[in-house]
Length: 339
Ligand code: PEP
Ligand code: MN
Image (cartoon, rainbow, N blue to C red):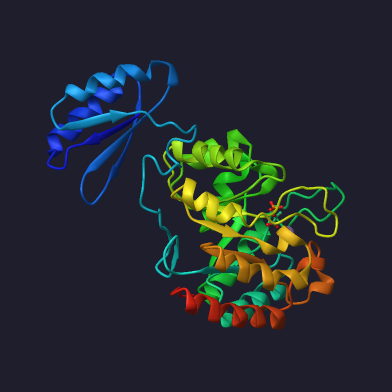
């Protein structure tokens, strides 16, 4: 339920409502707007009508149900867009179109530092790189694990780029979050609810990728798991879904971008690399993502794609990435966005 406070409600009245909501067995999720405070009372759906009695409490204007299954992620409770900040220079959900770039996997010091320096020079704001890799085959390269995280930290030190890297299991979470600026939850883990709940207890930003066969509703419900534990810093990522089409690795569902922007206040970015699997499609789909209103892109770039240990076939080399950023600039300018 949403408890809408009157514009002139006092701090004491708001605190009193918090107390009453908790007594009724619900969690309190306040949103402090410019005009008024609204309070999300989230919990067991079955007893929600008891909350209706709070309408007679001083300072309360109305108590209304949240109709959608995703309560905290939806626009019903929070109308203004969420801005997820990473350090001082990065703001997902703002006018800035955030470009994240880097290799699929961290492979060596030379590879990650060279790639980081090139993507930084081209205009990327963040560096990506997997240290724990969820591979389809158990015989494929699984990542450098902690050594990979150390190399990412070195690249951050050298370039100033913040880093996003994937966490695969709840057990790895303390280690990965001690290095990462943004935790990536991969497509294959989108419904790993144990992992989502643990990440929800941190306040570190999370990049949540859409599952391979997940509907938009399921995607938003996964984000709801993270927010329901308290972490509101979620960035969504459309990365393509499974369809009958085999000419591309996945079918990039760009219509999900404007749709999700309507349904949710969370920022959403696009991954044209996994979304298509075809290097020549990465720049056109990045431009289309910007035109569709995405808050950024995450692009696989490798200093030498031919030698890559994972996803080399879809990675751009640094020169192609330079051209991609160049092609994006006029579109962003026309839309009043910055890099
Ligand atoms: C990745 O980002 O390298 C990755 C494995 O992505 P996804 O989880 O979207 O497949
Ligand atoms: Mn990859």
